Length: 318
Image 1 (tube, rainbow, N blue to C red):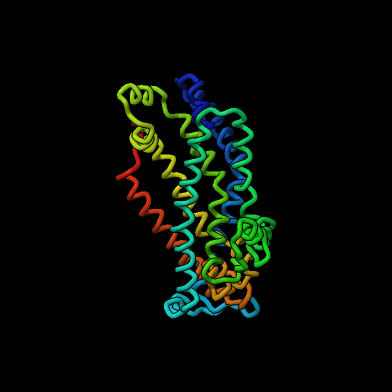
Image 2 (image 1 turned 90 degrees about the horizontal axis):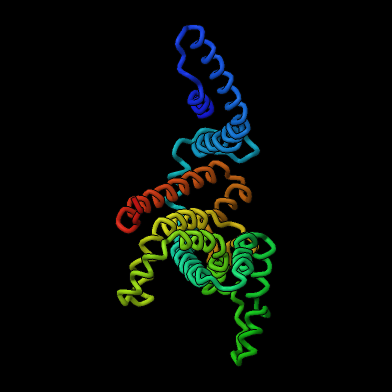
């Protein structure tokens, strides 16, 4: 029975005769049809845009498919090839480095700014909008192009360093030692989205806890570690899972900054970028599909680990 028909049944009196039961069953059927009609666009999108391509991708991962010739069944060949693909292993290493470094830095900055904004300063709405803006623009091509110009050999960063007496001519984008760091910095800069969620969570913590702690002489740091962090842990966990998944899907920044090469020296070769190169650059769709499913497994396992570990540090107010 649908929710609509269930809610409708509450307002109806209990049927006493077979005729009344038949009439109410007919009305419930009409309600169900209306519910399914409203759900139809979402169901069509789920099947056509999500489930259909996923099933097709799973099939292609077991084939040799070049977009030109029909797919040819090859069994587990694509998955076996991945074991000996050095560039794939490097892309996994780069992506894990990016996720492990950028996500904690981004969440830490977001939480810090949210705590400051929670003090009730004037112009809060303006500051909140300004800090949220990078989250809307950070993954865009325009910002990635701007980032490449800023960190170029004659970019804004070197000009600022020279203005304070540091004679820097380093091409931050062209140097393998710094290229990934610039993209991590871009990801950290897009802290607005988790910051807004943290701010909403902070507003839900009752003030009486802080007042009682202040009466007992607790310092600000003690109040933050003993009250704020435990009560905010469900929000931290939510942001952590969301940002880890988003970080594994990062593509635009690495593609634009490295001109689609993943260079220099594969230092910015993200997993998603290497998958793109295999699929749309070398037309190895079967291999790219196998890579996509490996990424699904990696993200799924990490998410499961996060959920398992959450019972040790996330506190829900039951």
